[in-house]
Length: 339
Image (cartoon, one colour):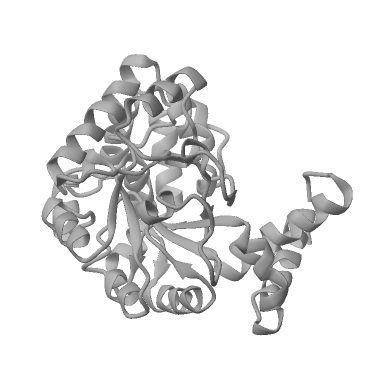
């Protein structure tokens, strides 16, 4: 067993113990001091084709996770959390969020959350809300799901010579993240065509992959929050000033006006933040009430533009309990940030 897999095993075992009822009192202090924002992507029933095409978490597992979360935490929406200056009395606070704007209504995810009183915030990519286009990483995932990793790798090597030595489709991001913002759409289209996939607009419309404006208004009317996730899901650290306006400020303001909301959270794709001066411009625009990364939980009192989140599709016991608490214990004992 490799060192990395050994660590994962330790985190999982520790997570099972730390998430148990017997340890509730001992771990509550850790969570009380933090804003515990978790995020998922797609939620699908096991028999839905979207699970094969886009991945995510299976609906029944998700429902079980939400039941557990509601028992152990006060679950608040993102805007409510941002209105608080300090943690409220009672159970620790958790906030459930979703990236990429998948259809959480048709999949049953919304009903599963509402059954246990969990509000949520969904971050949408504006290019996808018409259900005519796939976000580029979703297109890649769909090719892999439909055609298999072997075909995907062969086609990727056709459109990008730098993928010549890539042997693991799961590591495609090491190649595709180097695609420039100007190239990305064209290379994704070339990859889609080389893979002999069906027409993209037909596939997206057939499966109603994303929330549309009607869905988002329904989502809001049921007490949940819509946030922004850029126009096309780039690596934001690579954006220049003009690209930042096209990807974030202009479409974010337009979405906010279209939905007629006063508050709109923002979450960075891949957790990849803008360069400091550009991030300052976005913060000063006041279009968004927070700028969220993906580097873990944040201490209460953290500036809203510096808040972070935890991806939990691999399970709350591992990602919310085991991994972060063990790392915090290690850091406290040794000052070493690595484990």
